[in-house]
Length: 231
Image 1 (tube, rainbow, N blue to C red):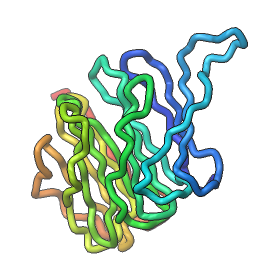
Image 2: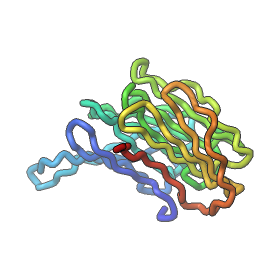
Image 3: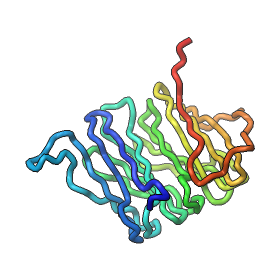
């Protein structure tokens, strides 16, 4: 569906191989597709591998996936990537690429903000090897879950903030030198935008006052990034 972004591409940190994940039809199933580019041509001159499938968990609705996000693990010799996707319902699925296969396929919520918008985001802590997903939950909350790189599982979702509005858009971004992760929510259903900070163990208080005059559109129009302090 060209009104959404049912695809993404990531690069393995250690090999430089590209992994493309995508939805290619509107069939109501639990299937995503992927291909890997390794830069080495086969006998037919193809540098992309054969198409593979990712079967999402039976705990989520059988539906086409409207949004797909991939995030590679930084600062590592690992080939890991984290995948998240969502369709037209309130389910958000996750899976981990280990360099050769998709594993730990599960879901973090079946009660997410039921909107045809990109209401989730994923990032890795740069030091610990843990990952995070943040998403809009229900009609008011921003929730999060942590992937443990040690235990190889997701924690139960916790609350980031009660926004008092539907969290329609989320973006989180990793500090490349620490376990800090910045998050920006919105514009939400009331056109408010809020930025908060994770310090590696908890969400910090004292964030800036929310901006209340955002443009509440279906497209993502708020972003975050880290800059290098050269002082």
